[in-house]
Amino acid sequence: MANVIFYEKPGCINNTKQKKILQNAGHTLDVHNLLTTSWTLEKLRPFFGDRLVQEWFNPTAPRIKSGEIIPRQLDEKTALHLMIADPLLIRRPLIQVKEVFQVGFDVEQIDSWIGLNSLSLEIEDLETCPNTHK
Image 1 (tube, rainbow, N blue to C red):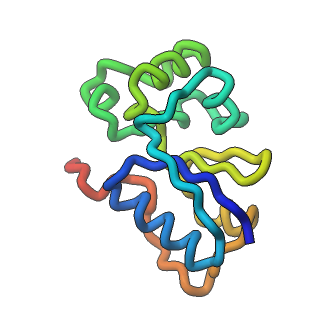
Image 2 (cartoon, one colour):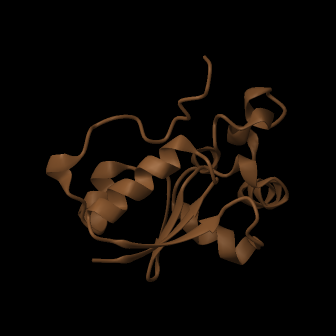
Image 3 (tube, rainbow, N blue to C red):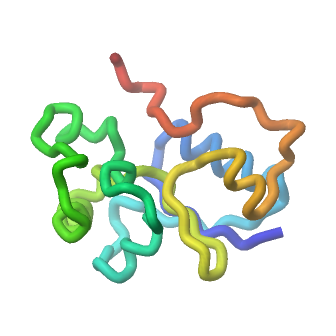
């Protein structure tokens, strides 16, 4: 089983479900508040790997929903600076196991990476905030 460093927004319903899935699979969690972590470019960048910049962002963040920030129009450096200044913009959760970093909670990807109890998983959207009104 893995020691998972997990950056969350406290009180987020989906982050709570995600942590429970990891714990039920036998992983230990080292949980951090995404919003109060002192982010730097060097500390934040590894979580996004080779994903497109627009995939780094939380689509339900108020500044994105309002159209103030349009992630697909941003370059990497600008995106990182915006997220450091306003961590609500960061897609959640951020997960680290040893030297491997990931953003978001793709159940299949995490299962193949560190293992989950796949048979007991309910397939549901664990990334879109259920409090978001469309």
